[in-house]
Length: 161
Image 1 (tube, rainbow, N blue to C red):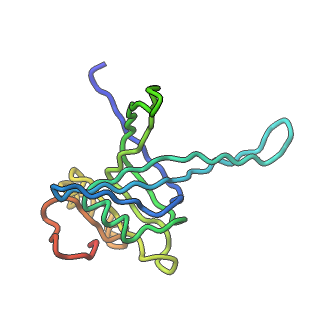
Image 2: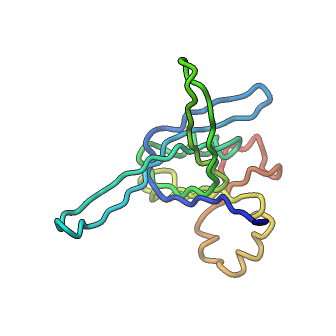
Image 3: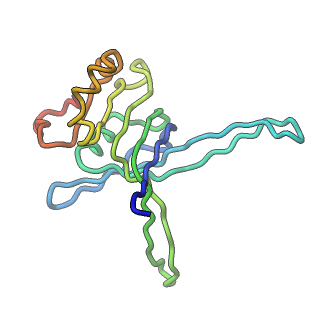
């Protein structure tokens, strides 16, 4: 198969604050857990069942700094990215695996009165097609300020938009 796709879209609540790691070259990584919930009724017992799935989210550079500043534990957020599984060895030499969501886009969904307000993090490909999107969906685009990791963002400005 020539074409493949690795894309994840999640809406959930943060399980903790964003943990940051900074590198010598100026880059940074932010990590936080995200909980998604599934609710359904068991057909045999009629009982309401709720399942929670936890996802490890990884955000890089400017996006990580925005998440650290505005995301708090319990906030609702939309995450878009790709699945990445890493293999490593524990202290006993056993192979271990961890699966993460490498975040490429995010939108804060917690209302303004409960946190700093909605902010959208578009990917670089979305930045290029942003003019087309604004013409087709002007009301949505105006209500959500955008943040980009591209070089057009002023590094001295701490505002996310």
